[in-house]
Amino acid sequence: YEAQRDNLVGSHIGETEKKTEELIAKAHGGVLFIDEAYRLNVKDSEKDFGKEAINSLMKAMTVKGKVIVLAGYPVEMEEFTAVNPGIKRRITYEFVFDNYNEDDLAQILDLQVRH
Image: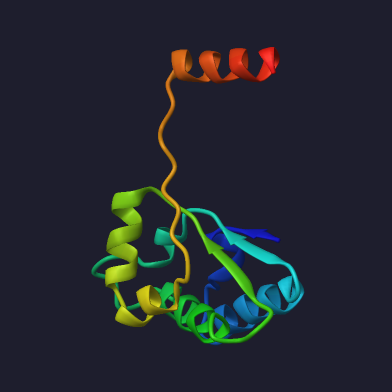
């Protein structure tokens, strides 16, 4: 299952936890991929419900059978994981992918075609 902030964060009290836990349940036994996960944390906002989604995800990250992928740009993800030290401790693997320009992609395609 793929999700973004809008799929996890509600607009009123109680909605965020429900939305997040429903997505986590649907993904049980599979993968929950959260694109731009850093968007769950809105800086300097006490009224944002994104922190509730983060707390629900952190709880789910300790349950066996759950694979949660938090994706985003490296700098933004570092800021995101600094919000709560518990997030970083629950991340088992971290992958950083290189940015490829058009020439790099053409070279990769060329190598793939030749083999």
